[in-house]
Image 1 (spheres, one colour):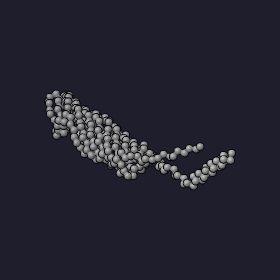
Image 2 (image 1 turned 90 degrees about the vertical axis):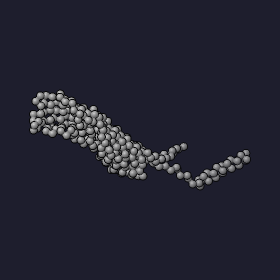
Image 3 (image 1 turned 30 degrees about the horizontal axis):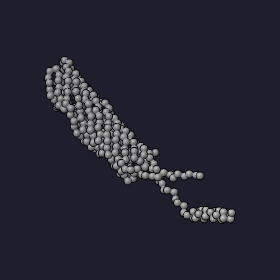
Length: 285
């Protein structure tokens, strides 16, 4: 019995001494962690990104001109014309230099847009009494390559307004051109002109403005407006038919093609997002 009491006393003393020793040891700090970056965190050190956009165009042309030097020499011409809207698709690669300046290079395909135009013609001088109309039809598409620069104007609630500009080149293609004429010069006559397909490279420039929403540090969605100046377009050689003659003629020229574009795009950062540790788990009991 006495031996049992001694054993219990020794065990209790051992437990008390171990607890006292543990109390003297330094308490290990909890594992360090960093809070997750906010959705609109900027990369002050810059980084590469990829971009892609889709949208639609609202295009205009200053005028359509028959490049035959004798065309409309003694006539007054009133012209109306318009393009249908066309789809826009582009991809690009860029670099974010800091939280307010970035630049990218884009390649854009502007889908086929139908053209319709009408000339109302009134003869003057020796052609007094001549009246008529020309109705035009064609389709147009472009390839556009631009170098763009943007200024980000600050971020509020993960939304960043921006402005930008770009310069580059455009390849304007005119296809399926027709000119249907109906005119009176003593008697009523008709004519029909076709033109071959042709393309022309031009200097192009653009002005941009929009809003960017930062979904997370690696993904940004953009809603943007762009004013595009695409240069001129041309048809191939014309072949004209009327009631009396067949004439191989000069091409028609589309002067000063511009467009107001609306686009929805995304930007993907190629830099890894900052790693962080979650809050440590704390349990009771």
